[in-house]
Image 1 (cartoon, one colour):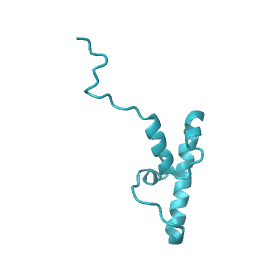
Image 2 (cartoon, helix red, strand yellow):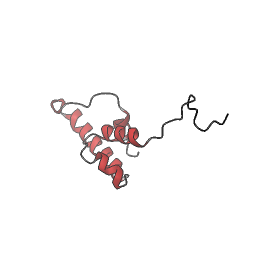
Image 3 (cartoon, helix red, strand yellow):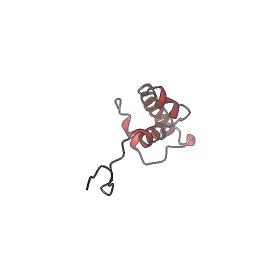
Length: 82
């Protein structure tokens, strides 16, 4: 993700509060840009999952949880012929 926006998505910190002044304004601008990049990268199905989300991190986490392939378990016996 360009424009130095990835830190908004991967941050584990709570976003600044409106009373934090310039810190909040900076975060809000970067969040809006990151969210826009995520939204325009989605197909219609993915976008419908995040259309009401206002946080880039929340949108990313939602999409990751829904669409990221899950690793197969080593305990999974399906496909093993004995």
